[in-house]
Length: 174
Image (cartoon, rainbow, N blue to C red; front, side, top):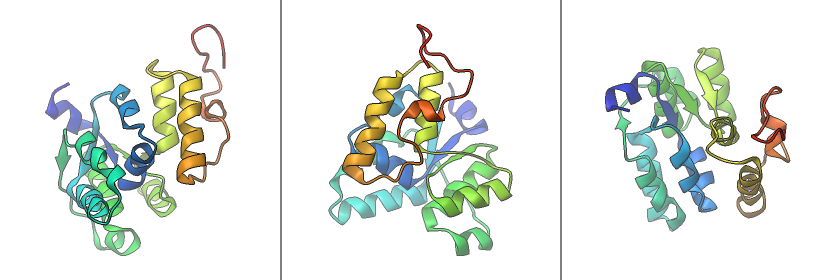
């Protein structure tokens, strides 16, 4: 996929999602997502600041999204309502007809109000399963690590609870 294709309909990842995958050492799971994961300079800045403040687990996250990064110009309402990274990521998703990947409730609500597609950490796992890049058991292990190790407040206990109703894993398992 060319950079031009990536920017046409990117999934713009914010710091919360990247930190979930990074905290438990699961950034490699994102390699299965089609090459359209992008971020904004503000998120890179937040990740770098985290590393400088002793959160070394974030260092690999900086490299994980280095593929494509672009600037955005959030409006005043976004800048006033959200952290810098979320505001810029939401603005970029809007500007590039993309999807915002965030677990931040306020950012998700603003994206919905603006009719911007939204996903999150769990949504990315679901996408990987549906695309055949990750098995349900492996996704459940990632989710369990987030809950047990990172204190992630998941709205589900098992990833199968978030799969589309008609999804069947190869072999017929739901």
